Every structure is written in C-alpha cells, then in structure tokens.
Image (cartoon, rainbow, N blue to C red):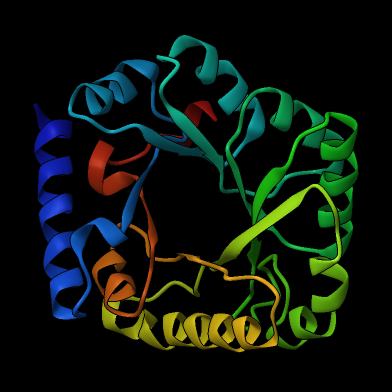
Length: 231
C-alpha cells in the first residue's frame, strides 16, 4: 500500500498547489519516474490509476514497456542519443522530454518523417547555466527558434528544465520562474502554443506547480529510495 498512499498524498499536494496558483488541479499531470524500480512497483502505481511513467534510460524503458498494460504512456526524460531515436519512436514513447540541441531535434524530425509519424518533444533548457547539465541556454534557444519551429514531423509541446540541486524547495523557484518567462517569450514570437512546462521533482514539485508546471516528474516520493547498485 505504500506506493498507493504516496500517490494519493502527492495528488493532494498537487491539487493544493494548483489551487494556491488559481489553477484547476487537472491542469497538472503527474509523471511517475520509474527509473531503477521494478515492474512490480510500477504495477502498484498502475493499479492506483497512474498511467504516465518516465524513464531516464531508453534501454530500461524498452525492457519495461512490453511488460506493462497497453494503456500506459511513456516519456523519456533523460538524455537521448541520436542513434537511439528510431528505437524510442518505434517503441511507442509518447514524449521525448529532454531534447537538448538543434542537432537532436533535427534527427528526431528526420526519423519521424521516415516512420511517417509526428514526434512529440519538449526542449530542455539549462536555466541555471550549469556546465554539467544538458540543454539549450535561454539565449541559444531563442537564436535557434526559427530553425527549431521549421522542422517537419515534429510537435514541440513546450519546455522542460532540471534546476540546480537545492536544499530547500523554495530555492528552486527562480529557475521555474525563468522557464515560465522564457516560454511566454517564445509563445509571443510564435508560431507554437507551447502548452507544456515540465518542471519540478519529488522535493520541489509544489513550488513548480505554483509557477506554472503542467508536468511534474516525481519518482522517489512515490516509489521510495532508489538503489543504484544494480544500475
């Protein structure tokens, strides 16, 4: 029951944060980050109504997707190498969240065209300017916006970010504000509505919701502490 109880608590927290921001609770989607957790744990979440799951590594997703019910949706939220794009799209990944360069976007566009489909993506922005992090700089995404939006077979749904680690959830707020404001700026430039903002994780998702997150990526707060020794 642990996972079900955690899910219900998190949904309650999301609804409360949305209410504080004057938003409906259903304007926020909970993405259960299932990386490193076994299918048995994911099934417990499924049985409590969770249908959207996220994996960092494509290989792990490819192992799990066939074993879960077909009405699950899967997002790739970690870095994706260009030579793995075809496998991701063919496996039925519904959203690639961490598109961190124009070259990767171009590869996804080309392969989606070959597969006669439209790929749905988010663009990852390195809002804190951390050298160790992937992602467009805020300036870089603006400079390449025309090229990005001209790519065929691609639906750019919005932006995502992974802020620098913070001790307090509140300390992540400036990063969330920065991503929201960047999305507003890009919407004004057109031509895309950019409805999605993927930001906020287990320790700071409430703050992210207050600042406009439409997808929060929550893993350990649902499933418990991760054991990386086997990964």
